[in-house]
Image 1: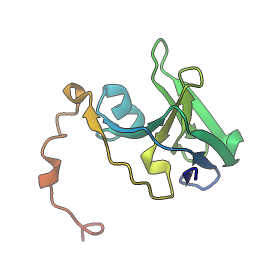
Image 2: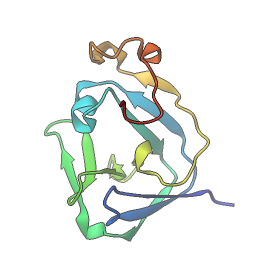
Image 3: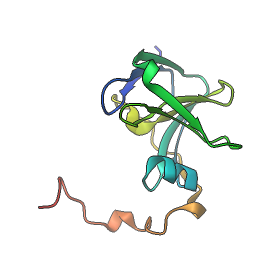
Image 4: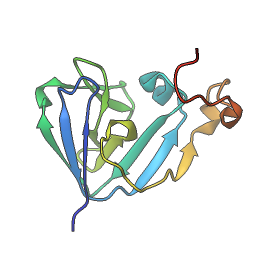
Length: 135
């Protein structure tokens, strides 16, 4: 049985499904990933075998590639949410983990490019954890 995961953007205009297994899951701390996510790291799933199928809003999917690099990002043109992208001339599917609506079982393989991580990205496990906005 082929594994199927579904996902969407924040505004709900774009929906997709991924058929197949994820081969790896990396948390990338490089400067480009921090810039493109606006946070401490990107959390991306990778597959060379899974297939991407747009269910809705494919016309809203925009892509950006940093010139002279392999760094690419797809996003919803309405809400800006990160979306899956097909890279390396169709050989690699990159899926932002937060874009998935369905649960998946793979855990991160590694933090990568940690030499580039933000200065404030230290000992975050020690920061106070709240169930909702502070009062």
